[in-house]
Structures are given as structure tokens and as C-alpha cells.
Image (cartoon, rainbow, N blue to C red; front, side):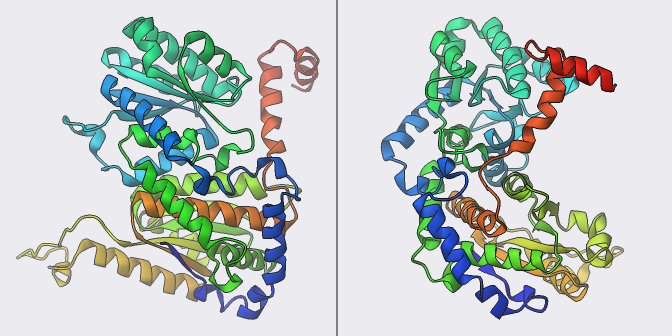
Amino acid sequence: MISLNIEKTLGFISKEKVSAYEAQVKAAQETLENGTGKGNDFLGWLHLPSSISPEHLADLKATAQVLRENCEVVIVAGIGGSYLGARAVIEALSNSFTWLQDKKTAPVIIYAGHNIGEDYLYELTEFLKDKKFGVINISKSGTTTETALAFRLLKKQCEDQRGKEVAKKVIVAVTDAQKGAARITADKEGYKSFIIPDNVGGRFSVLTPVGLLPIAVAGFDIEKLVAGAADMEKACALNVPFAENPAALYAATRNELYKNGKKIEILVNFNPKLHYIGEWWKQLYGESEGKENKGIFPAAVDFSTDLHSMGQWIQEGERTIFETVISVDKVNHKLEVPSDEANLDGLNFLAGKRVDEVNKMAELGTQLAHVDGGVPNMRIVLPELSEYNIGGLFYFFEKACGISGYLLGVNPFNQPGVEAYKKNMFALLNKPGYEEESKAIQARL
């Protein structure tokens, strides 16, 4: 199971101040458990891991198998929470070069509906022209512009290339139980469909079919993912003492750092496979806490790569930052540094060492340098990259986010600010129903 260490923050904030959050954290946890706080209609994620039935997982796996047997490529169409969780797991557990290999054990997973790039969509449709492909369309409403536009293109291409009967088998909808354009389309066309629960927001939805179906199609063990989350649910429960509860401790520490002027949290990894974990985490915390002119700004970096770009700013820039480092204890493969007779690069002192040992010393050296430079550091350790540990990591961050949002005094489960750009975009595109807004915005321009 994952572990949290806050020792390298204690030169900046005191242990006593963190411990003083115990009562507030308990109150926030009780508010979550009792459903008495803001956003209480979106708490379906809270006990989701322990309530997922074996039958539900079997249904997801059976559908995944249909796609695996009938597709070379599966496109996951979704944006934000509708794709980031799945992508985070798939990228973390996949071979980095699988998509380039001739022999594949699972369909190649490609993502669409998360941008409005014409070149991206053109190149995608060109790539798919000679491919047996399927689509997982993930949208509660079916009218989110980015996803709906991509799905409209992909649906037509799939039907044209593979015929309506095959398309019906290889297009799956993950959507609302009863309403919305995607639900109506799924029922009309006869697609297999899964439900996004009403009480689970997108950024908390990775353990619903939104995340579980694509992860299963990619060939990963969704039972182990859910088991890791369920064990973390117990480890972060209300009855676990504050000092032993990682979600409680993380929420308290980051809020105390925020109070002390640390306005930016940088999520750091030293394993390139974790890049999309950072992208998922940014949405989770940014969308949950960035309200009422408050909230820690979530950023993410990939080390040691970004030490050669962002490293200078982190070491010596404005001291408004703290880092949360995700460290992977044991890597899955072994590679030793060879000896070289000429030694022109001066690396013979590393000969015979594992590459991971070099990486671990880069991690330790960075932590010491950044703490010396005035950057508090928290450290989350994953024993290894596996479905079980990533499931635990997701639930840990989700539970801590709920607590942290309530400590901050905001509703962690809504996102009213997301609508602002959409209204302007629809007015500029003269969408029916936006006539008054169109006139107003044209006057401004």
C-alpha cells in the first residue's frame, strides 16, 4: 500500500500546527460521511470502491473482450474527467513503445474529444482509414462540444468503414442512465451502454465505467485496481486516527502550507509513466478547490526531464511553492550501466549500477537541494507500479481532496467557472438559443 511522509515540510511548518487540524479534519470527514456539506449530491465516489459488485466488473470485462476481439484500435472519446483517469492508468501500466510494435496483445488506445484541433482530428481519421476500430463514447450529456464533435466524425467513419451492424457492436456508450443526447443515441442505435452515476462528478469517476471500461480494453486488471482503492478507503476511513490516516494528513499539511504563503503545489514524479497521473491530479484539485478567489494552484513536472527546464525556477524562484513527490520504490525491469573502455563521457563510476539507482539518487539529491532552497517537500511512495497501487493512489487523492476542499471552505464538488468559456464560444458560433448573447458579444468585439 502507498505511504505518505511529511517530514520534509516540518522545517517550514510545525508538527504541532499540522496536528492542530485534527478536529477540523474530523469535522470535514463527518460532513462527507453524513452528506451534510456543500455538493452533497456528488458523494457517490466516497464508498464506491467497496460497493462495486463482481457482476458489474464481469459485465465490463465481457464488453471489453468484445472490443478486444473486434478492434485493432479503440478510441476513447471524452474530455476532462471522462478520459484523464483512464489515460493515467493505461499510460502508467503500458509498455512505453507498445503502439510501435507489430505484435500487439491489446488494441491500441487512442484519445479524442479532448480538443478541437482540426489537424489532430483529420490526422486521426486518416490513420483510422484502414483500421478495424471501435469507439467508447464517454459523455453524461452527449452535448459537450469537444466530445460530441469527435464522436459525430468517428460514428460516421465507423459505420461507413465497418457497416452499421459491426459499428453497433464496437461502439459503446458510457453516459447518463435516462437523459441526454448520448443516452438517446445509444438506445436508438442499440449500443451496449454503461451508466455514469448521477452522484459521481467527472473528476471522481475513474472507478466507474468511465475509467474501468477503457482500462479493461487495454488489458489491465480492473479487479486489482478496485481492490487497491477499497483498501485505501479503509485506510482513510473516519475511525482511523489522524496521525495514521494518509488522506487526513495530506489535506491538513497542504492547507497549513497554503496558510503560510505556499500558493502553488507541484506534483513531481521521477518516472515518465506517471505523467498522466499528474494531469488527472491537476484536474481533481484545480476544479475542486479553485473557487471564490481561493485555492492552491496545482502544477505538475516530470523529473529529471523538467529539472533541465523548470528546475532553476523551483530552486531559486519566488518561494510560494511546495512539492509533493510520487516515488516508485521498485521498478519492473532491470538495466545496468555498461562499462566503456574510453570513458569519454566520464560515466564509468556508474558501471554495474542499476539505472534505477542513478534515478533514485537524482530524486534524493533533488529533494535535499529543493528543501535547502526553501521548498517544502511531501513524499508519496508506491511500492511498485501496479493496478493495486494506482487504485489506492487515486482513492487517497480523492478522499484528501474532499477533506481539503471543506477545510478551505469551498464546495469541492461543483465547477461553475467551467461554463464561462462555453457561453462565449456558443455566442460567437451563433448557436440557436444564444441570439441575445451573440448580439452582446459582437457589440463588445
